[in-house]
Image (tube, rainbow, N blue to C red; front, top):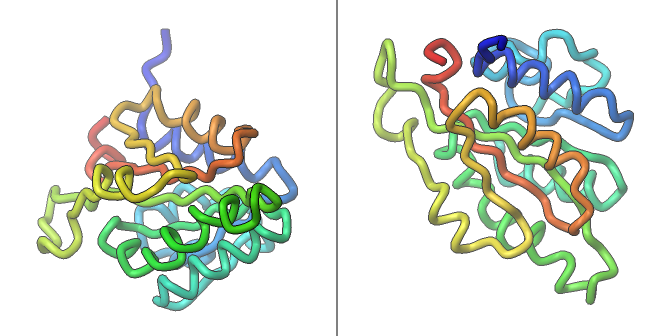
Amino acid sequence: MKLLKYFDELKRSMEYLAEDPATVFIGQAVACPGTAMSNTLKEISNDRKVELPVDEDMQMGMTNGLALQGKLPVSIFPRWNFLLLATNQLVNHLDKFSEMSAGGYQPKAIIRTSIGSQRPLHPGHQHIGDYTDAYRSMLKNVEVIRLEEANEVFPAYEKARTREDGKSTILVEYGDFYNEK
């Protein structure tokens, strides 16, 4: 049995998502290097990526708009601490579109974030938050999945892409596992 590597499974998952012509990768350091997540997107064509400045609320608003247009946005927030700044668009809009439209709109987005790595260098407490449980309690139509093992990665991204239950998905990675597992 082949031992799965966390980073390799993330890379494989991104390439799998890119097979869908509706998929658009959006965020900071998606078309340009800058985070560990950037390395999982190296094999994906730049015409499938939308590089954005640091403006998380705007990014989630664009994610919502792309999803409403029938695209499958993969919106990348390198750390939970950054996703906090997009909470308005996530909780008040993406999570509520189905209810606000009496089921008429059920846009699907994939939100990718992580618990920031602490090794080999601790980046400061403002970069290592894990808000998984808090967001699970706030969201009804967005499922939050924490990816703790390499063998959980691909199935979770596959579920996020193929789900037909009207829900979006937040996938929570562990920055430390990119090199450790």
